[in-house]
Length: 226
Image (cartoon, rainbow, N blue to C red; front, side):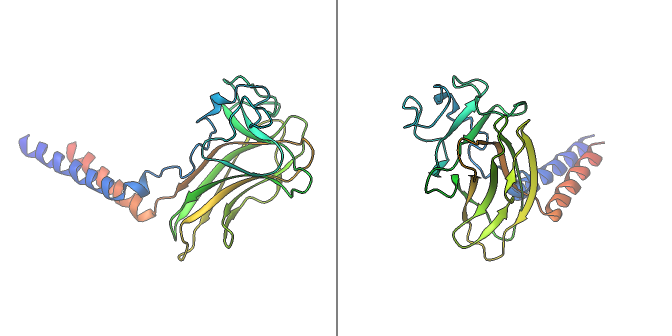
């Protein structure tokens, strides 16, 4: 029994070492900060949730996101004072969301952006929830890139106005990729046609070899324990 216990401890120690070595790949973290727009959502308490200066009582920024151009935008949510006037018919599955109203005179689009850091030669998964305001037919887009390189483009899409829909895609960075880009959320439609985004997640996909090594280590530890 003492020998078996020692073997079990060594096996689990080996597994732990593998996890510590490959942890960043295996336990991928979301590279988007405040992708669910909950960080300072409570500050948007004045109806209908516009960023200031449109509604001076609300803040001029959303944590980690910058309003680049376009007309109005802000945050709606289940538990904040603004409520959800810019939600689709069914807003289940989303607690807080960024809303982006239409394009103003002289603007080609309404745009919110956030700088993110990716690594070269790496496959990523991206998912997001998107919708249009009830009855609206606004066209939006999710894009990742910089001035010279486009890494991901969802394509211009008329998001559904009946409920939030979750989209899932993958993309791969190039071998010479420099690491610094931005994720960009668009509305291309004029007037008060409104798009909404939430639950944005970008994670590195573990390499198969890393996953296999971890699985072997854990299986070995389990068998020795038995």
